[in-house]
Image 1: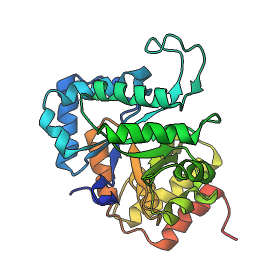
Image 2: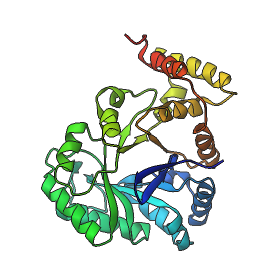
Image 3: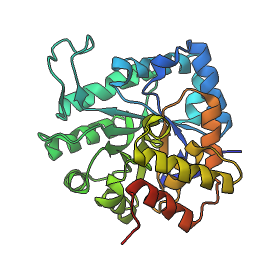
Image 4: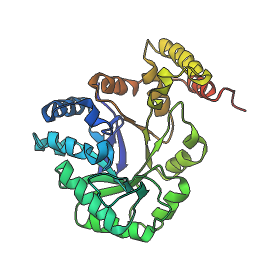
Length: 302
């Protein structure tokens, strides 16, 4: 079984299942073990890897780069996504004394160049602005994007956690289209289904990426009424779909959305990546989708 593809531009596609590297340092993999995990992902057609400069306390990109350096030819078989603009006190940035955002031209360029060095690659496929910055000067961001693209350092650009108005502002200054918006969306977090973000993505044919696509574990561990309702409903639907797991049902639910969401996994366990790929082909009906929505909301649709 192989992950399907989503076409973002004429010459860029993502695997529908995307591994995220936020907790890669917690996986306790050696570079060779991480390389083996990467190879197993690639063998399943899972070719898009999501990172960010801040992940692992500004160390996750380097972990991935160290593994990739063991077999550099694999770079041509994958798409690398990373992010910038969030800063917090860390030895990597000794001048930073409180968490904040920085979307100045100089910082975006410097951050991208640092990511390139850590990832040990010449090009980032997609660079994202990680969080909306209240001091964002869209002209400065556009200038940084243009400089990085013209230098061949970044192919395409996107955003993360942006609302439609933030995207409109930035897009108004760009010559090329924003190709993705990575937002939190899951059966336990419905905000972007109703606040216009996913509608905006569908309208403009922007591929949304979903972080925390199975609710960050709350779905499996919480004993509140909502979590219990969801587990019972999804277990029943999973049984009707052939005995699939709750996390596969949660992913299949996201994949039904017409904006063509690409879930970003947070796991280093290859069997869970494999299960996510299998979830891509689950035949969930429209009524089953609404059953899960109702279980999450606690009431029927109007």
